Length: 107
Image 1 (cartoon, rainbow, N blue to C red):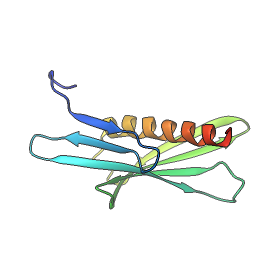
Image 2 (image 1 turned 180 degrees about the vertical axis):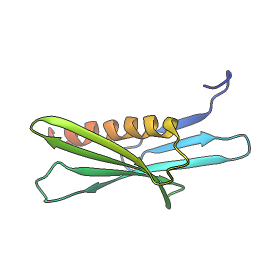
Image 3 (image 1 turned 90 degrees about the vertical axis):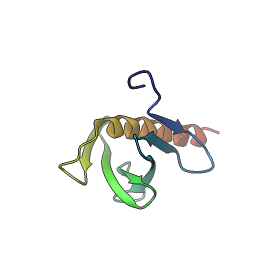
Image 4 (image 1 turned 45 degrees about the vertical axis):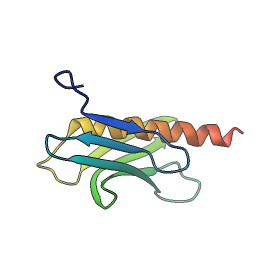
């Protein structure tokens, strides 16, 4: 909410990718999060990439688990255009995806 109006929407879907929709004054931008494994097949390291409209990478979150401690680092692809709202939304989607992956393993 910004100034009493809704600025966007987060759509969570188990069959397709989770989406963030942000409404600008003139346009609507859609963002999606994709996951890539980094390293060996047994490693927990992951790279979460936030794409704008499914094609332009905006943000990369590096996730690693070392000695039972999480390490997170975020990197905007355009250093001059840092959007912390997108970072928070991407972290939310990342945690949701991790939660859905861990619950699928326990079935």
